[in-house]
Structure formats: C-alpha cells, structure tokens
Amino acid sequence: MDKYVIGLDNGGTLSKAALFDLKGREMAVYSKSTPVIHPRPGYTERDMEDLWESNCECIRGVLGQSKIDPVRVIGLAVSGHGKGLYAWGKDGKPACRGIVSTDNRAWEYPRKWKNDGTWERLYPRLCQELIPGQQAALLAWMKDHEPRVYENIRWVFPVKDYIRFRLTGEACYEATDISGSGLMNVKNARFDRDLLEELGIGEVYDKLAPLKYSSERCGSVTEEAARLTGLKTGTPVAGGMFDIDSCAMAMDITSPELLCTITGTWSINEFISETPLVGTQIAMNSLYAIPGFYLLEECSPTGAGNLEWIIKNLIADSHVPEGRSVYQYIEDRVSSIDPEECDVYYLPFLYGSNTHPLGKATFAGLTSFHDKGHMLRAVYEGVAFSHKMHIDRLLSAREAPRAVRMAGGAAKSPLWVQMFADVLGLPIETVSGTTELGALGCAMAAAVCAGEYGDYAEAARSMVRINEPVMPDGEKRGIYQKKYEKYRAVTVALDGVWEKFTV
Image 1 (tube, rainbow, N blue to C red):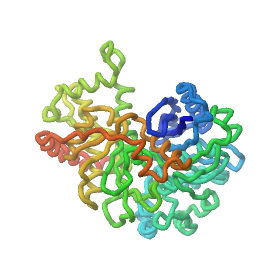
Image 2 (image 1 turned 135 degrees about the horizontal axis):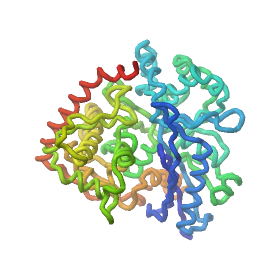
Image 3 (image 1 turned 90 degrees about the horizontal axis):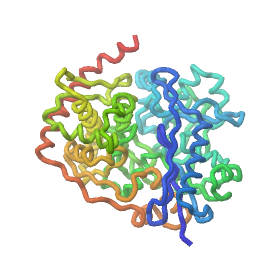
Image 4 (image 1 turned 30 degrees about the vertical axis):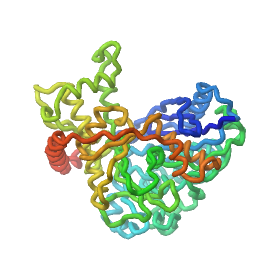
C-alpha cells in the first residue's frame, strides 16, 4: 500500500495543505485565505476560529482532490509564520484575535529594553535581537494595554502550535519558532522564569507549554478534528516547524555549508551552525529543526509581499492583456526596462523595515518620465536589495557559500531569480517538483516521525530535488552594485524622518 504524508502551512494570509508521497512527489494542494484585519495602522490580526476552519477546509480539500483514502495518510505536520501571538484562553476559547508577525503595535518595547540595558543583560541567553512582532514584545504590550485579555491567557501559541493544538487537543511547543519568540533561553534550549521577569512578564512562565522537536510525535488527530478534516482518528501529528525552517529543510539545508533565502511577506535569509553566533552582525539565533543545530537568521517583513500589495492596489484588471496572467504582465513590464535605465528606488517597507522600526514604503526618484514599468522594476530591485542587506550581515560571520538556495514567491519568477543572482553575485539554486516548500518540509517531518526515514538527511535524499544553478551576469553585477549603494543612501537619509510620522 502506498503511503502519504500531509504538510499544513500557515503563512501570514494563506493556509495551505499539500499531500506528498514518500518520494516527495506532490499529489495535491489546496489553499484558503484568511482575511487580515487592520483595526488600526500597524495592527495585523486574524480571527482564530476562521483560521482553524480554513485549515480544516484545506485538509478536506487536499484529500478530496487527491482521492487518497485517509487510511493511507501515515502522518501530518504543521508549519507556520514565526512570531506573532495566538493566545488560547482559560475559558477554552481564543483569548483574542490572532496577531500576525507583521504587527508593529509593540514597537516601543524592544527599543525600551535596548535603551535601559535589559536586552544587553539577557542577550547571552536570548542570542537574538528583540523585535516588535515577537511574543515577548506583544505580551508586554498586552499586559499594559489589554490586562483582562492578558490575565485570561492559558497558552501562548505561535500559529502552527495553535493549529496542532486544535488537531490533537494537546498543548506543546515545537522548538524552532518558540525559540524565536524572545521568551526562551536559546543558548540552553529552555524557559527561564527570571528572564521573563526581567522583561516584566514573569507570569507568562505559567502560560508556556512543554517543549518538543520537529519530528517528535505531538499527539494524534482527535475524533472532533477527524470529523472536521476527513482524516482518520488517531493519525499521528509531528511537531512540525517554523516555516523558515520548513522551507530550508525542503531545500536540503541539512549541513552548514549552504545559505538559503526565502522571500514571501518576510525577507528571510539563513544558514545553520552547530553553535549560536553571538556578538556578530547577525540578529537572530534560534533552534533548528535538526536537534543540535542552530538557525542563524537575518530577516524583516520586506519581501515579495510588497508585490502582492502593488498588484491589489495599483494593477487594474484592464491593464492585463487577455490571455496573460497578472504576473506575466508584470514580468513583461519589468524586463522591458534595463536595470541601468531605471533610476527609481523602492523601499519595501509596507509591513515593516530593516533599517528603522517606523520605516514606511517609499518610491524615490520618480519623475513625469517614469511609468508603471519603472515602478515595478524598482519593486523587484528593492526586495532584492533588502535581501542583500541581510545576506551581507550573514556573510560578515562566515565564508560565502558556493550557492544560495532560494524559495518563496520570487523563486517562481525566472526574471527575479536572475536578478537575485546578479545582485548577490552568487549562483542561485531552486527546488524542482513543488513550490509548496513549507508544506514539503513538514511532510518530511511527518515521514521521519512515522519511521519511514531515519533522519532529515535521509528524507531529503528521497524527497528533495534541486534545479541547475542560475549563474550571475558579471556586467549586471557591477550595475546592481552601484544601484545598491544608492538604495542604501536613500534608506539612511530617511531614517531621521520616520519618527516625525508619529507626531
């Protein structure tokens, strides 16, 4: 009997289920969007019951599309965006709306902790910067601004641990994304009450769940969840992982040599190490999906999600020729303009910045000469430049890799992949066979959990296929280097402006 595994991936706006065989072949994919709620500027929220129902629909949908008997599904695992806050109440219901990682309401707390010396004292254990979208900052904000909600919280969940809780009825944390929360002693892989007390949220210690690892069994599908999803009661559920770990795993990042970049809503750039690297330019160390390894990450919400906003707000259906998709139309417009002919710069700060906590998205250099094509090229380039800022910091602490493996929305665009190669000056490799890398990485976790593979390296040999590398163009590399210097100059010039927006 053929066996199958399901990966369930929850991003900032979309939930997806993908079903794979044990060779990594994608059998079916089903997705459902969950509306993002913006009650105030800087707030990004989702209804947690709607999110759960969307996940159930995705599982039903992928089983229906594949026509696979649920008995042949030997396991599933969940990935999701890191950070954010999905709090479960003592009354057995969501304590509040889910808060997405792009939320910026708590921006003042990391700044306060840095200015008063708290972060410096805790850094040897945290091994990471503190940022507004983490659970630590959001819980501190909640304690000060929503004390009734804060008091009612029973479990503090990242999104994927919340969904797994609804599938199994068992509360636990999988190590990868909770170690990026600002709540954990990352160096020693544990929770310390005194660390939380230093952050002013000591009572959160009693709201934390037991710690598990990505391929550990973390319960099984309950009767209620089976009724809602179509899965068999008792189907094993593995720990799963933070989506950036899941994408890395699906790109066979199982040793420290390679570096990978993921561009979705967030610009994610990372490699793995057997030790955390502190005292460097690298902002984030967290626990990797492979026990004994740390994930070294540079990130910000400055990725390809900027293009989706541009499409929604600036590209009318009437602009797109019949028979062409909106993405084909955009690729045509971008490729019609050479990089040296486009002197427009775009700061991809719609959801947050990697230079200033209050930075805003900006087009710089526009004149009456420019048209939509110049603006679209500037968006492509701005996202690539933002990734380069992060990758330069990573490379300050290690040798350049032989290639960068790339995933996310931009990896679907040959033009954008070539641009990344030219901007970074490094070969770019992508994955063949599926674009649902977050789901594939979780499917690998489910397969290891079920005992089909001894470890992730063995799973990757069977389930991951890498395309031939896209090589950088030396001439364009020089052009982009000059443009990158101008891009950096614009970001520096505007850093002194953003706080005036709050006055």
